[in-house]
Amino acid sequence: MLDRFIRECAKFEFILESQEFRIFARQSGEVGDTLEKLPAQNPGQILDKYRNVFKVSEDIDNSEVARYREKINIF
Image 1 (cartoon, rainbow, N blue to C red):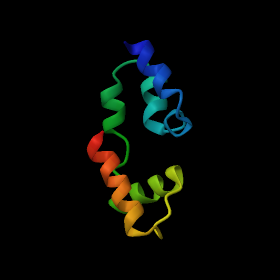
Image 2: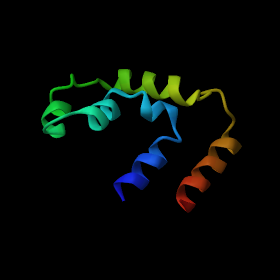
Image 3: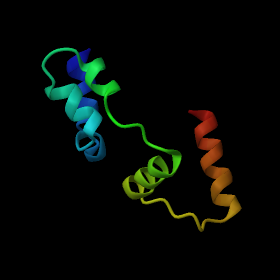
Image 4: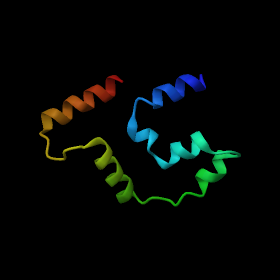
């Protein structure tokens, strides 16, 4: 199952390049301790990271937003 998880993650470049994944994949010893030592990000930093990774346009019309919400709800 771990092998399958890694293969699925490898499909997404932004995951492979993330600091958290690099710690998970290359860390010797306890991963949780190292992850807990990462500096906390404020909501603005997290939002900027997602904007850059997913190239989200915030100028979309309401019908497109409704379609996305429907897809999320179905998921």
